[in-house]
Every structure is written in C-alpha cells, then in structure tokens.
Amino acid sequence: MSRLTRVLLCTTALMLAWVALPLTGKAGNITVYSNFGAGNTYDPANGWTESGAGSFTGFNSLQAMAFTNATGQNLVLSQIDIADSFVAGNNSMTLNLYADGGGVPGAVLESWTVNNLPGLGTCCPIETVFGTAGVVLQNGATYFLAPASDSVTWEAWNWNIIGAAGPGAVSADGGATWTVTSSYSPNSAFDVLGTTVPEPSALLLMGTALVGILAGLHLGLRHTN
Image (cartoon, rainbow, N blue to C red):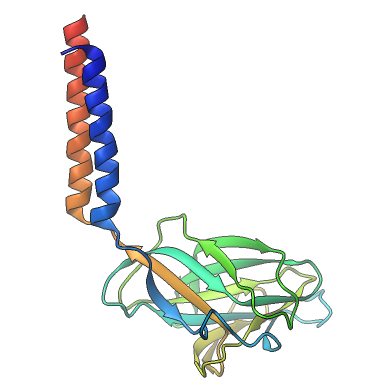
C-alpha cells in the first residue's frame, strides 16, 4: 500500500470519527428554561430597570433572574435568548451567567457583549448569544442570568407575558453585593438551551480513531523509508 493511500485512509477515518462524535454525543438543543410567549414574544413596553450610577436614572441597578436545570440530565450550555431594550446611554450591555453562590449570583461562568439593542417599545426582537466556554449546566442546579449596563446606560429587561414569576437577586453596586429577591412577578423574558454532554463511548471512538491514524501514518512512513 502506497503512502498516499494510507494517508487518504487515515484522513477518511478521522472524518468519520468527527461525524460520529456529535451523532452519539449530542441530540440537538434542549430547553432548560423559557418564559417566552408563542414566537418568542414578550412585553415590549415594560421591564425591570438595569442602569448605571451615571445614567439618566441616577442610580445603579442590576437585576439577576434565577433558573434551574430540571431536565433530568446535565447539559452543555449552547444558547441563551434574552429580551432586553435600550432606553438611554450607550446601546450595549454585558450579559453574565452566574453559578449559584448560596442563593445569589456567585462565580461568573461566561459573559457576552451585546450591542445594538432594540429601543424600548419595539416588538419583539430578541438577542441571542452562544455558549463557547463548555459550561455544563448540572441537573438540579440553579444559575443566575443578568444583563449589566455600563455606568451611563439605562436599559430594561423586558417582562414575560405568560405570567411566569421566579426568584432572583438585585445589586445596587454593580454586582459586588447582592440581595435576594424572593420572586420577580413577572420575571424578565429569556430562555436557556443546552445540548447533551458527549458520552464516554463517543470520546472513546474518537480516541481509538486517532490512535489508528497515528499508527497508519507511522507504518506508511516506515514503508516509504
């Protein structure tokens, strides 16, 4: 067998392994939490205030909504959709996902910068971010989501329209300290999606394929030399 043939076979094996991994390890997006109405609708005219001390409001306000992974399985964070509206200041916000720190937001697990928010009263665009840090949402665990404005920005985290309420936390110092809010009623509109954690069998398949490829390349090199 020529060296070229061996390389082609090894490349084919690698491609098959990569295709097989997502098939055995992932089953598409699974909804961890959602309080959007039909068609991702929400209340475009009302929401909880997010603002900086130098904004038009004159005070610092940061709201965090809690959600729990009650799907019965661990999931890798894949996507978050949020309804957040611009009022005044810089048209940008930072979206933070927090671990549970004893009933309030704890360690930041992942952050995203979101620009060009729709104006308050505009119905009904949503902002979408994607998980890239490999955050695993543990089954039964609670997490917090909070869009943070900068020091001069005022924005509103729009309310849901399905009557959903839930716990959360509020901060008046930019997230340095938090106070538990037993229930936001209504709570703000968002959803969280995840994919299944790759199974050990899928990882083993990839490892076996890589070993085979390396062995084939080694034999090919020995043969030609």
